Length: 133
Image 1 (cartoon, rainbow, N blue to C red):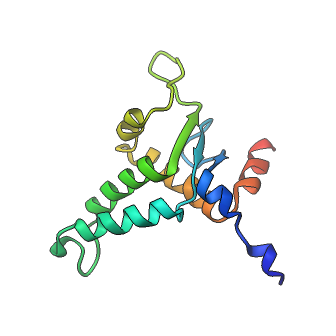
Image 2: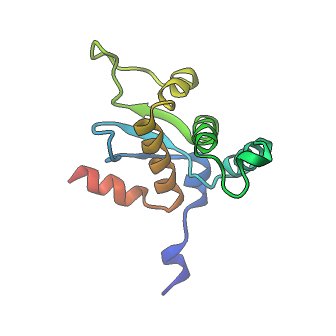
């Protein structure tokens, strides 16, 4: 094994990349930073520490985890999207306000988390290649 074969491009993690073929989000592409970018780690730790002890010991309450995930994805992960439409079929432009609304929907939140994890793992090229096939 060569260490360069498993190294992740930290520039992509910090600046973001487009991810396609996201489970449950057919036809949607998300531009995301990696889930282990510096801002993500800092904010996640801050938000978890702010949760009352009884909701995080021994395990973080699932509702709190969903709330934290939505905030961290919105503020530190999701940068843009393509393929999202309103009820009339018109494209919805990315904004943090719209992201906040959509991240309350479990399947969208899970898809955005998936995309952020793909960027962190350096699987973006693989995901893009698979989507093109």
